[in-house]
Length: 442
Image 1 (tube, one colour):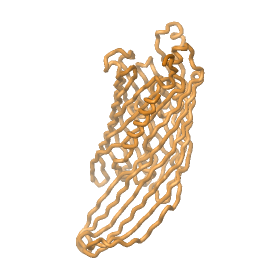
Image 2 (cartoon, rainbow, N blue to C red; image 1 turned 90 degrees about the vertical axis):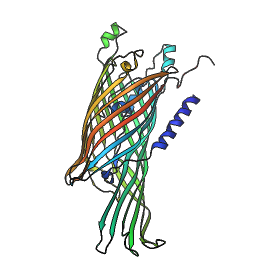
Image 3 (cartoon, rainbow, N blue to C red; image 1 turned 180 degrees about the vertical axis):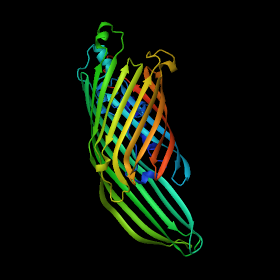
Image 4 (cartoon, rainbow, N blue to C red; image 1 turned 180 degrees about the horizontal axis):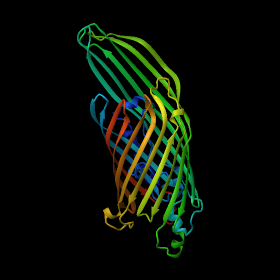
C-alpha cells in the first residue's frame, strides 16, 4: 500500500508543476475565461461524448456513477499542446502555440476484484471513490498597440491577462445490479490578473498610466450522476460463458448551480518618463468582495458496447449560463450553452495477447457547441473532429495505457475573433489491482 500512496503523491506533484496556464486566447477576458470541461481520455478523442460509458478498468471522469462499475484502481495523467491561428474581421491574423495540464484523476474501487475471485464471492453492492485535479477555466492574452501621438512620438497601449481557476474533485459511486449512482464535490479556486498601460516612451517628462487588477476566487460545486446498463445478449451469455457482453448504457449527469466568491486588489498609478521613474499612486483598493454564479449543467447520453470490440456513444449537454452572473469587473454577456457530441471506438482484437496495434483502441468523434458568452447577439460557437489511439502495455502484471489524440476545429464569435486550432492530447493510464488486497501470506 505504501507504493500506491507514493505513486499518488508523485502524480499530484506533477499536476502542480503543470497547472500553469500558457494559452493565448483573446476571448478569455470575457465571462470566467475559457472554460475547460473535464473529460476522460477516451471522451477527448470521441468528440467529448461518454457520460454513459462504463468499464471495469477505466474510470469515466464525466460521471461519478461509473465508479460503481470500476473493478481496478485507475490513475490518469494528461497534458495537451495547442496551435491557434487567430483572425478578426479586419483580416488581422496571429498564430500561437500553448500547452497546459489536462487532468489528473484517480479512481479506486473499494472492493478488490482479486479477493472476490479467490473467495468466489461477488460483492453485491460495489462502490468506489475518486479524487482529481484539473483546470476549470484559463485566461491568457496580451495586446500591444503602437500609434503616433499629436504631441510627437509614439503611444503604446498594452493589455494583458493571465491566470485561471482550477478544480479539485472528490467523487463517490455505488452500483446495485445494473443501476449506478454517484455524487461529486468540487472545490474551485484560483487567481486571475488583468493589467493595462498607456504610455509615451518618446516624450521625456510624460506620465504613463498603469493599472493592475487581481482577483482570487473560490467556491464549491456539487454534482449527481446516474448510469443504467442493460445487457443485450444476457440469454446467449447464460448458455455460453465464453461469449462477451453486449451492453446498452444510458447516462445522466447533473451539476447544480453554485456561487463563487471573489476578492479583488486593484492598483492604478502613474510613472514619469524620467530617470528613476517617479511613481504616483492614483487609486488603490484592497480585498474588495464580489460574487459570481455558475449555472445548472446537464448532460445525458447513450453508449453501446459490442463485446469490447466496437463502442458507439452520443451525448447532449446543456448549461444555463444565461441565468448566471459575473463578479464586479467581469466583462461580456453570458448565454445558454448547448453541445452535441458523438463518437466511437474500434478494437481489432479484444484479446490481451494480440500484437500491440491489434489490441489497441482506435477512437473518432465529432462535436458542435454554441453559447456561454455572446456579443452583438452573436454567440460563441465551435465545432471540430477528433481522433485518437490507446496503446496498452503490461509490466509487473499491471496494465499501462498511453493515450494519444488530436482535435481539429474552429471556435469564436464571428464579429470579434475566430480561431482555427489543432490540439494534441497525450496522457498515461496506470491500472493497479493490489489496492485493498487481502494478503494470504506475509
